[in-house]
Length: 115
Length: 116
Image (tube, rainbow over all chains, first blue to last red):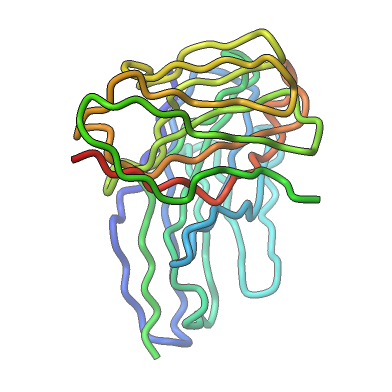
């Protein structure tokens, strides 16, 4: 069975601070993908990034960066110089190549960025 | 493209009533799924389908029914609504099926259901 843990339920920062959202996953499969999704206050769910289990390269996209470490089963997400528009619920998800590729989601982290 | 379209956006039901939440996608995605979102519980999979004519249960299937007669549509039926089914429901699709675990999900905008 797969499991995704986002231990941080809520995080509050002041604009321009850096913030890291933690994601820890569990799976016995050796082939899998990890994802981050964003849910802004308007409610829609938007895909941000994916990473496969064979690629531990970190990725940077503008103010966003992702750190994938198989040794600690973690896929953490960092926002640099946070902005009010970053306020949202962020979900980490795991899909494996067995079990019809169903996605297992963490409980989400609510990020509030204050001006 | 419209992507994934869910209707209605809001619905209020009384206990015991039945209804169908509609979901349609125009991306020719084989895989479709229904999730419910409850505060502090993330997204939980209700039912999913890997193609027309094929459906299977997810994590929380009780009280819900689905069918997949076409690639485009994946309706979710509440057989006899209960207050515990008050939630926000999301339909999601993904390209491919058996080997599509690497594809991200495309979500509809959600249906907020209240059962009184």
